[in-house]
Amino acid sequence: MSASTHGPRERIVYEAAQHLRRTGVAGTGLREVVSAAAAPRGSLQHYFPGGKDQLVGEALEWAGTWAAERVDEHLARMRRPSASRLFDAITDDWATDLASRDFERGCPVAAAVVDCADTNDAVRQAASAALQTWQRPITEALVAMGRGPRRAQALSTLMLCALEGAIVLARAQRDTAPLRLVARELAPVLDA
Amino acid sequence: MSASTHGPRERIVYEAAQHLRRTGVAGTGLREVVSAAAAPRGSLQHYFPGGKDQLVGEALEWAGTWAAERVDEHLARMRRPSASRLFDAITDDWATDLASRDFERGCPVAAAVVDCADTNDAVRQAASAALQTWQRPITEALVAMGRGPRRAQALSTLMLCALEGAIVLARAQRDTAPLRLVARELAPVLDA
DNA sequence: TCGCGTTTATGACACCCGTCATAGTAGCGG
DNA sequence: CCGCTACTATGACGGGTGTCATAAACGCGA
Image 1 (cartoon, rainbow over the protein chains, first blue to last red):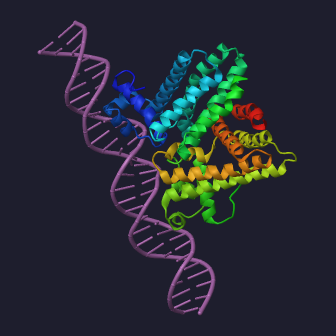
Image 2 (cartoon, protein in one colour; image 1 turned 180 degrees about the horizontal axis):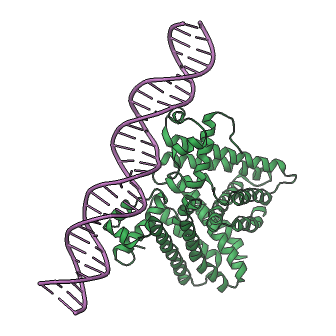
Image 3 (cartoon, protein in one colour; image 1 turned 60 degrees about the horizontal axis):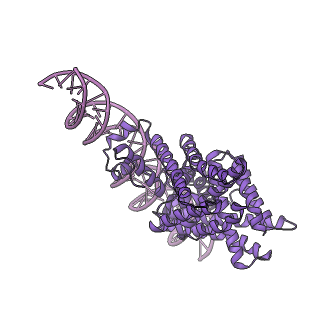
């Protein structure tokens, strides 16, 4: 969960993602990111000639694969996996993260969509791709549990919708209740 | 849905809300809002001495009450209202709005939360209040349908979570499918 | 030791931001 | 007509933004 491999480039991408989670795309200053990453400012134009768009894109990609790996970890840890148990684990992850950091950080993908869906198609596509990266292992797990591909896709979409919305509500009211609620209410649908 | 009463002040608030929906808080420039509202720039410091925070706060409040009224309209139009039918109507509203405007505009409340939950508590509180304003008529309708107050509250929270998340996913992939999906999948839970 | 890619350093650029100070104009009651 | 309030107009300020140009240091192979 910390700064992946130790190069400055990786640290910048990681720190960009974290900053995205807190203040969105427009609120994320490149100078600030670089200084938080303890990286030289000159590295920006060297490693990210595509400018801010490229950096944000890579941050989203990183976040997507990180989330996907996290899903796999949860699945590996379960002795008898089920859809509701997986969703429980994911929402619990987020509830813990939100509460422990005082609701500072949300989902970077949601931040990118909300800020850029209209004005920056490159970022929007990166967000969409990150979402797919995240969703794939969930869908595959559901298939492994016996659902048909279509049904698995629908259920994983439902999970991400409820999760993203619950994160927004949780941050708004500074309370993890929405996350616990969606986990509880969706369980019957997910396990049906 | 257009510019409420015709005063410059109202137009500014309305236009601020619309701009929030497109580019978030940080991406919303005051000069731009004022010019879109065809209002004099001087009106800003006259009507909103609290600065940008006040304007954003009022925009969120306006959006909250507007959404609440919309809920009441849907309920009034139904001959035999049910939880799933109400949720259908709401998601359908959003799907139509998103598609008709090419996924330009999302939910202003989500935008405010994503951008400011960490850095601007005044805006965060305004977002939370708007969410409550929106949720109340839904909860009350569910009570009128026979649910207990606690259950009604839980179900309305579930609706908003799924809706907010579905809006994010829909904008990311430029497809209203997530909205239709959550409406379909949640129906059994809502009507149980 | 030289040379040459890779990486870093730093300052400048033009632009947009929110806020404020200040002066101006309407419009209405007296 | 005056006077006062509500509103508008406009320019400036300080600061932050992403981007670029340019030069310096580094590090490794020859």
